[in-house]
Length: 92
Image 1 (cartoon, one colour):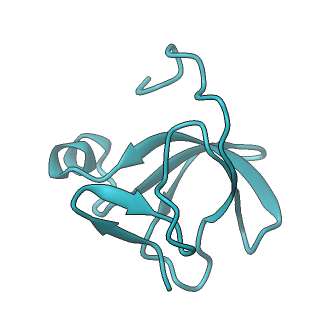
Image 2 (cartoon, one colour):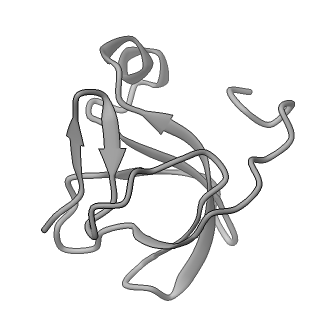
């Protein structure tokens, strides 16, 4: 199953609902990240200029990176629930 957005709920490939603060892995599991924003609503997509639903991640070595939820070749992998980043980081 690939990542999906249904009824404005973003889900990882395993079906788990995405939430701010989640610990994830990208780049075929090589790189750790933390979900900073879950972007699903049309106004969010337009505001961030990303063109499709996805997750804004905080991840070394990238800093802030957008990862589409429909990427079936390299999906975001859910690791565990975490603590959301400080409110000053969200939406800067």
